[in-house]
Each structure stands twice: as structure tokens, then as C-alpha cells.
Length: 296
Ligand code: IPE
Ligand code: IPE
Ligand code: MG
Ligand code: MG
Ligand code: MG
Image (tube, rainbow, N blue to C red):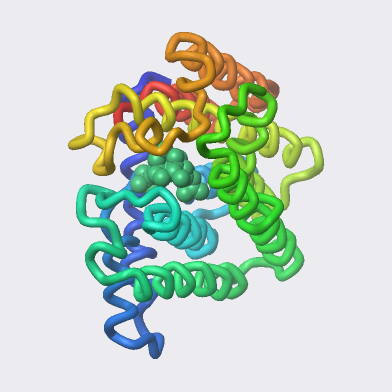
């Protein structure tokens, strides 16, 4: 599938996600000021890669999109919470996100922390109420909890903070940090879609392998864009990692070797799809390429 066709499919799939995100905080007794802070970051755009991966893996194994949508969208709530907290002065101290002032700049630190907390917990409420077989929903939600939690994204963020400025030179340490802070959520985005669709063990293995490789490529690309990206297109600061002496791929290996590593991860993700002949698999292959060579 060429990149243009992939982007069209991506846009179509994103529409369902945007619709679900736009209404997921309605009819709940959330204080207005908190809802405003949550929606401010949630509805500010974003590539919506995680929900699209969940939907695509669910489709790949024959599920209808509609009942999976709230689960897929909940992954975006968790991701958005992680971005709000990541930008806080105590963490990366970044003042812009998704093309607008970061949540704490707009609403203050306390409200930003609570908006993040609200998004994280509401995500699980959404996940657990999807109208699909309870066993599948529980299995998928349990995997998301693991991926987002201390042995996944939160643990990776702790490693990111702890390793900042230490001058670590082991690529394995960097890889482990990236696999946890970014890879875990991308991997579970694929895995949860496959679980919700009732995929068998071979299918689940493919989802995990594809997601892990894509996850690493995703953060390698993010690190590269922090060096050479366009602030306008990305909607967040460039040079933040260098400013804070972050442990990143370009800092450790340079741009060229980082690109090669990212490309090898894209290749690995493609190999993970072998044996799956469908339009969805073609879409995933093209999406992996986009993730590595994106400019946003
Ligand atoms: C940025 O994620 C943070 C990382 C995990 C690298 P995205 O690049 O997916 O950000 P949005 O959702 O498109 O804003
Ligand atoms: C953040 O990584 C990963 C998260 C879990 C949010 P970064 O700190 O590199 O993400 P950006 O560059 O600020 O989006
Ligand atoms: Mg960070
Ligand atoms: Mg950051
Ligand atoms: Mg970054």
C-alpha cells in the first residue's frame, strides 16, 4: 500500500476515534473546570496512532469497529494523560504540546496533574464497559493496566528521569527504557485489539512482535525529531532532550545510526506480519514506515 492510500485509511479510522473522544466525557458528573482541562489536551489533535492500531488489529481478526471504538479511544486518554504529566516542570518542563500551551501552562500544575489522573482512571471505566465478551475485555484491560503501569510506561518514565544527565553509554539500557516508556503502550494497542477480536495464540504473538518493534521505531523517530524536527509541524518544542541532557538514540549513536536502527525495527515489524495476507496487514506495513519517517 502506498503512503497516500495509507494516509486516507488513517484519516477515515481517526474520524471514528475523534467522534468517540469528543463524547466520552459527556453525561458524567465531572466538575466543569476539570472537564475543560481534560478536553483541552484530549481534543487538541494528535496522531491517534494508538487507537488506530487497536482498531486495525481488531479488524485484522474479524471484529466490527463500533464496539471496539471506546476501548481504542481509552488508549488515547491514557496516552494524553502521560503527555500532560510528561510536560510538567518536575519532568520535561515543556511549555507547548499539540500546538498549544501545555496543560499546566494553561490551567496550573495542580489542575494538570488532576486532569491527567482523571484521564487515566476514566480510561479504565471506558474500557471495562465495552459491549464485547467479558473474558476478552478483561484480558485486554488487564494487559493495558500492565503496559501503562510501573512495569511499563510509568516505569519507563522513571528510568527516563533517573538516567537523565548520567552519561550512560549502554545501548541496551536505552532500549529497555524506550521499550517501557513508549513501546509498552504501542505494543498493547496492537495486542488489545487482537484480544478483543478473539485472536488465537499465533495471532497474539504477531501483534506483540509487531507492536514492540513499532514502539521502538516510534521513540527512535521521536528522538530524531527532537533534533531535526519542525516545531510548527510537531506542535511541541524541538531541542528539549538536548537541553535536559536526556538519554536518547541520537545522543548515544548519532543521527545516521539511529535512523538505521529505526529502519531495522520497521523491517522487523513487517516480518512480524508474515503469513497475514490482508488489506489490514498492508495498512500496518505502510503505517510502520510512516511512523519512522514522519515529520510530525
Ligand atoms: C509523543 O507521542 C510521546 C511519545 C510517546 C513519543 P505522539 O507522537 O504519539 O504524540 P501525539 O499523540 O501525536 O500528540
Ligand atoms: C515521553 O517521551 C513518553 C511518554 C510516556 C509520554 P518524550 O518525553 O520524548 O515525549 P515528547 O517528546 O515530550 O512528546
Ligand atoms: Mg519525557
Ligand atoms: Mg517530553
Ligand atoms: Mg521526545
